[in-house]
Image (cartoon, rainbow, N blue to C red; front, side, top):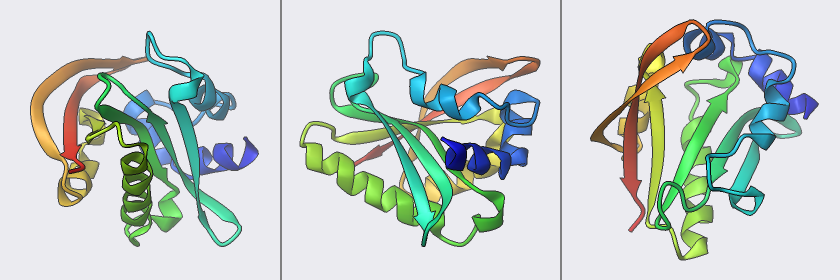
Length: 154
């Protein structure tokens, strides 16, 4: 939990863009407990991304959401000191292999908050495509949109 909180504290730009504030002390705990409506913890996975012994990122994944054939990435976050070095892309490839091994999910889904739109080129370069689905996004005083992306795993 403390390593995850350090990753959150190492990504102040992300938190400012999507929440309007630095990472809060309970954000790591929230990552472990937050679930979409109708899901339970058997479908929730939180992965640490490590370089050697140091946790430098995390992935929050929900199996079979929003449908049985889709796995939803709620968060893929890399400490700012390790960004733009291929760490996120390598972690995403491992995640894709993990999801394929289930044999039930044929696609990955992610959402990009408009105020954090600088990450959109990363997702598109990794084979995600725009679905045209846009949702309203609001967190504290940050109001934006959430663009849904999908990647086929076939």
